Image (cartoon, rainbow, N blue to C red; front, side, top):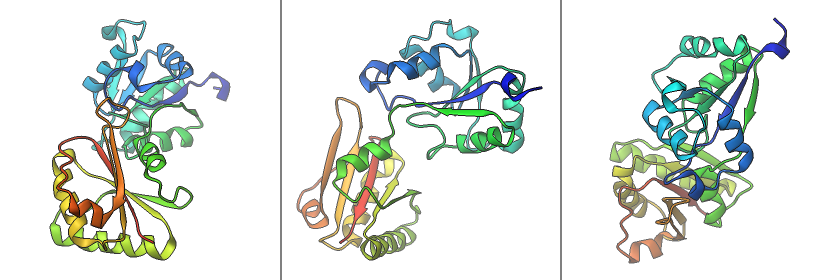
Length: 239
C-alpha cells in the first residue's frame, strides 16, 4: 500500500474547561475535528463531552472513540493505528489541553511515526505555555518537570534542587499537581524556597475564574493564599 493511501493522525487540543467557544479553538481546528469519525482518547466520557461542546456534526453514538490512557502500551498503540494504515484518519484527544504533552498520547504519536503515518498537530490551548506567557519568567530557557514527588521530604529536596538549577542556569521550572494537593504543594514551596525566588501559580486558565499570580516567595508568604482544587500550573524562577 502506498504512503498516500494511509490515513492521518490529527492531534486535537481539547478545551481547558467550559465550552469550545469560550476556549477559542480556531476554525481550522474545529474543521479538522468535524471531518473525523474516529477518535483515540485518554477518557471516552470527556471526549464525548468535548465533541458535543464543539457541535460535531455526526451523532455521538455514531462516532468511534477508543481509549488510550496511562495504562496503554505500544501493542495497544499499534492496534489503534491499524485503521490509519488502511486509509482512515483519526483524532487524538487528551482530557484537556494538548495531546502528547504531559499526556500518554506521546506513545501513540511515536508509534504513528514508526508506521510512516502523517502526524498533524492542530492549534489550541496549552496550559503550560499560557502559564509561561503570563508568568513574566524566562521564556527562552525553561523545563517542564511534570509532577513533583508526593512524600514531603522528597518534595522539599526536589524543590530545592530545581531552585538551585533555576538560579545556576537562569531557567524557568514548570510543574503541575493534582488539584486536591495544590495547597499542600504551595505550603512546601513557601517553606523551602528563598524569599527572593519568584513563584507563579496560574489557575483555571481560559476560564472566567482564571487567576495568575506571579511574585516573590516573600510576597506569597505575607498573604494567606489558597489555590483550592482548581487545575493549576506552578512556575519557579530563581535569580
